Each structure stands twice: as structure tokens, then as C-alpha cells.
Length: 160
Image (cartoon, rainbow, N blue to C red; front, top):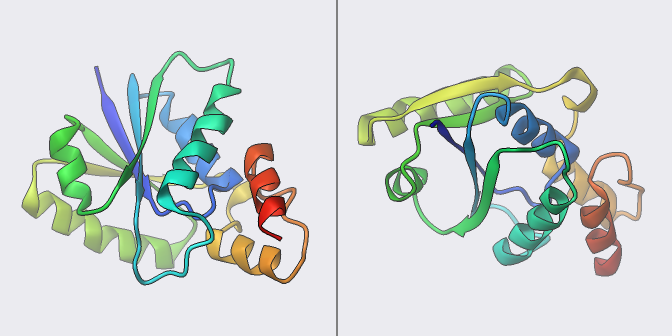
């Protein structure tokens, strides 16, 4: 049994995040989506609300036999690895800037615990989406309907 960790701040969860999680389900029997806090970012939603949003999105999936657990975590990703028996960390990459940042984190994580990180290139149709752009567009009153799943779209509408 392979357990994969998909960590991120996910503020808000986007179609890009969902794409990476769905594709991770092709090779993992269990997925832990770790909603981690990022004190350097101004949050749109609390970590607990982001967990609720992911749960709402995943509840609507009918093509998934993989067990998916979504949890909020305030601390190091390696602590999640140890406490949830994670075999592999999966990170979606949009481009070279993501790669440089994620590679450094992967190396650091592997010096702290025995874990490998898999980099999954994002699908072309969602490769331009980032949570920060979604937050900016939503804050300025633009439509993010094509960038986020329906439960997230509704939650963003409630913040306006």
C-alpha cells in the first residue's frame, strides 16, 4: 500500500490542486492532503475552512477508490510524514520556479526523515492557475468560476 502526501497551503483549493490529487490517485492507495499554514501569506480562508472545502469537493467524486484524508497541519511537513506513515510526498510543478523551490524543500525533507518527493508536472490546461492569482482576481471582483471547483466558487462568493 502506498500512502502519498499532497501538502500545500491551498488557499483557496484550485482546479490545479484537484488535478494533482486526482492524478496522484492513479498510483497511491491512500492520499493525505495536508493543508499547512503559511504565515507569510495573507489567508482568504482558515485552514479548517480549506479542509471543509476539500472534503466537499472530494465527496462529489464517484471515480475514486482511493482513501483520501484531508487534514489541517500547523508545523513541518516531515511531522506529517512521520505521524501518517507517508511513503512519498507529491508536489505539482507549474514551471522552473516551482521546481527550484520544491527541489530545495525535497532535499531538506529527505535529510530530516526518510521520504522521497515526486514532482508531478501540472496538466497544461491548469498550469497557469495559482491560489495567489485566484485570491487577487476574487478580491478585485473578477470571476474565478473556471479556476476553482464549485464548492470553492460558492465559498469565495460568500466572502464578497
